[in-house]
Length: 406
Image: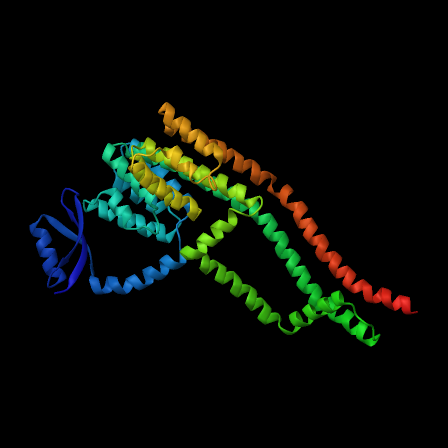
């Protein structure tokens, strides 16, 4: 017997959706009429499965930005406060979304809610779109009857998180552009300039020093294997990208980031800000602290911080203090985090203390990213100077030896 997915509507405007096995669409329509509903749409399961291939490809090539989810939380909060039903609010926001993927998800969530599913359970079916923090906060909002307040707080948190990560990415663009230009200019010099100088040196029958031979050797390799070289660079970038998606590869990169000059301090402060902001949000919403720590662990950008929070959650379940457990991870958490958490535990105002701590580290990250270019510029100048000096000496040495022979 074939299976059909359907939506239906009653005379008084009530809607329902579901999946059922019937002989034909005609029989489905008759069954619904007996229940007081009339069929509005029906799709055979076989057709839906075929469409699923395209849907999966669509998911692979499209993603939903944090900005769109932030706007969803903020606008939905305003609509609920104004008395608009949740399903209608989702329909309005789906129509306004510029992302085809997000429009589709919101439309499907709306249908699930109309069919009687809780909002949080409907969102949980899209883990690739909605993170665990978002779903957990919505679930708390439903349980407490304060969904509008929870969504408003969630939108603020997501805005802070987006701003923090954007600052870090923006600060990294300048050094990346400079390094890329240096490499491109170096390759052009090796391919276009050095071969001509090499031919001139051969015609003069000059005895070349080791540095010049190294430069000419690199030039010959790049000239003869340019496509291979570019393919190698692209392959390395792809391999790093793939490795960063694996647990061991991400852990290696996270350890590296926590040990690089300048970057290590920035990474610690960014993750401390995310930890403090998200834990404060979940505690304010009434989530038990053990569960809150596990939820926050999934929001961290560094896997070492994530693992530490899971260990701390287990320790707190055994009756230990968070501040004492944080001291075991003094290699990744700044001392101030431990001290402020201890103050919050002592005074009974952990949520407020964490919020203040988040604001402090967000300001610290802002200052670091503003000054990052001035910190990195001297290092880049030294590297450029060494490279240019090596190249210049390698080219000038044979010329000086020629002048000395005259």
